Image 1: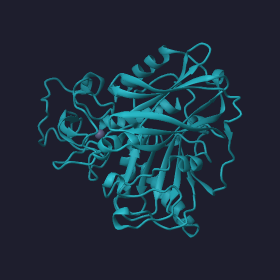
Image 2: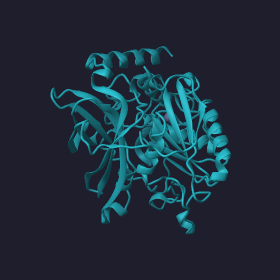
Image 3: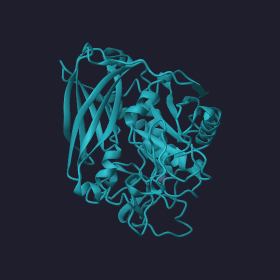
Length: 426
Ligand SMILES: [Zn+2]
């Protein structure tokens, strides 16, 4: 614990030395939302703007605005258009980026909906959208001046959808606000959705470090109505009309459950102040997905829902990578190039291992760390992770990010989640 406290102190000291800046100097209480399309293929990516809206609530962070956790495959940077100062930065990932690593992206081009949200600026800003090309290298994809007085910024009135507060302990500016969105629940299923959301919330708050910080977490259940009950299962030619169009069989992987409809999803999330979006799918079938700073989605009624919801939230909330791997090819096994250090805090190709958990290892530790009774419970450098059996390493033998039998997140994952909670709330 001493080591962890020291680490956090160091991180805060580095943040505060970069650029002292007050939220109210640049932003008002509302949110600016930008909808766009990622278009391209395995080798090329473009950004096409769709629309810009002003939303009623900004639920995100009020401090560390221009500090960077260096997470995500993409990032936005906001620059004050007069001084050129960076006034906000935020990383995120995209379903599009995962698709780029699939065989289909080698032979065809596609477009994917993507949305970013940031505090609404009081003066003109330059929005930059950048793509990560290495652990600490970025390439600009898009640059656009946003004037807050632009009459074409949509002033939307959110839909009327019933909302239930599952847990609220502090005001949104000091909290992690989680918008839980109903998917595949008809009007008749509303009370079931509220019960499912309550169960998901209670379960999440039994996992560290969420337990430790549960008095900083607000959870809202947004009871979006679907025309059909249940979730689309394309591999069985079973398609449903649901609130945010989610489906299994993403990239032809049976259990991979995602939604392509970012814009509909954000219309629903905008009903509350939010830091994170959790889509709860009304199905018993095993599956889920989680994309950093975008959304998590899981099956509410599967017998492993307890484990899967926490795993997927690890991806979407803290940018944790999958620590699992399998001998046979995984649909995402082209995600990582081991010549580069991955940005996820809990996996490493050892190219820039000093940026990961290297300082926490005991002296003389064997790399790769052999698996035996004495190493199974301690921090090491275990080979296998990020869908790869070779060349990618994880810090613990087992973790919630590796298997459903692990009881909790490993220490390195817990530290990453804690760092994010503090980043968003202090
Ligand atoms: Zn872990």
